[in-house]
Image (cartoon, rainbow, N blue to C red; front, side):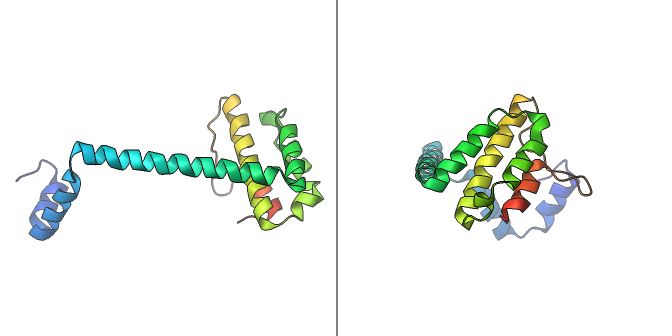
Length: 150
């Protein structure tokens, strides 16, 4: 079998036959029904995970500290893309949050990240915006450092 791509031709020539056979077998891997069954199973597991995660978040937010966190997050609903410093300053003033256990701080960071993504989406920006090396940290990274979440 000759390939138009010189790299594919080289691989075809120098890859041992058992390896090529195994690679071809992996690409053909069953019928369409089996493929659809794997996709359905993955979707079911994903739905169960999302449902369980939502239950855990709701349970955490029903605690006394969780209610304070929910109020804090509600105050972020009015913020715009220009209010990153306001968000950072507000979190820095929340002594109860900075002193909370690791689980609550991690949950807070996840929920704050969702708020930041929503604010960026409303502003017409991509939800994720990691800074380049040497650039100033984003609000998310500053908050992550404040909350001591790794």
